Image 1 (cartoon, rainbow, N blue to C red):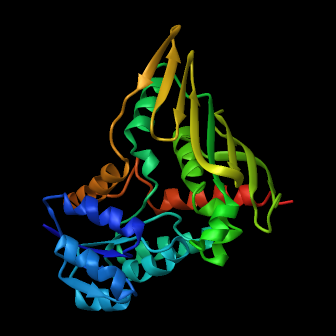
Image 2: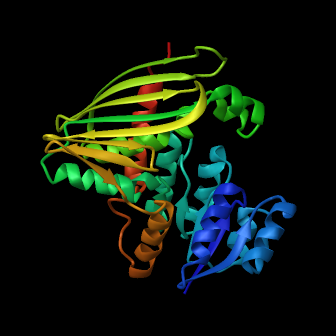
Length: 312
């Protein structure tokens, strides 16, 4: 049994708690959230004995094998850093900071204490993405990719859900999923980035478009729009006489040999990634592909910053 703690009892934290509670080899030992009225019902629902108001209290008061860090997005790095510095294996939600520099700080701490670290880019594990990737690669190398993630900046601004520090950097919040997915699927280092980023209808960056070339010849288009009125996520994987079109991670189709095949992978991606992280700890093996360790995280953050550099 691994003793696991969870930092953050919002929607992301509760999602991880639900999944971890289903693992027979995990004991949810404690949760950490500064708001008692939020954490207490979670502890009652899942029978969790330990409750803490801050991370230092959690680290001092509990003997943990691993911690899942899932606070509001702009706090991910700040709350994961002391966990890694304490030598506790840490899973942290995306983004792993709001800059490459923050992510590099996490990597330095992880290297110093030998604590394993993994970032929650769950599309790498989603059965539909995995199935589509495998079908294309069975025919030869990937040639071209498309990734899209759209939301409404107006709706987000009115909701008050995100801290002001994040509003002009929303590329790091949701579209970072698509950026990481495309970089993972390309399977190579970035060689060129050409981007246009604008504040079109708000005071925040709300239009992002990028053409990305990789050193293995794969070319990718990334489109992230916040002037829309709805959430939309899409991916395309093109290969040798085959193409996969995915509507987010809810379904998709593959076209090859003059026929159409539905993608039927079932799962959330999150459960699969959490299981992977737990298994790495139990077997004491490194966090490696398909997962995003901090080396992978730094590369994804570098690509995101290169796209943001196209702000006009």
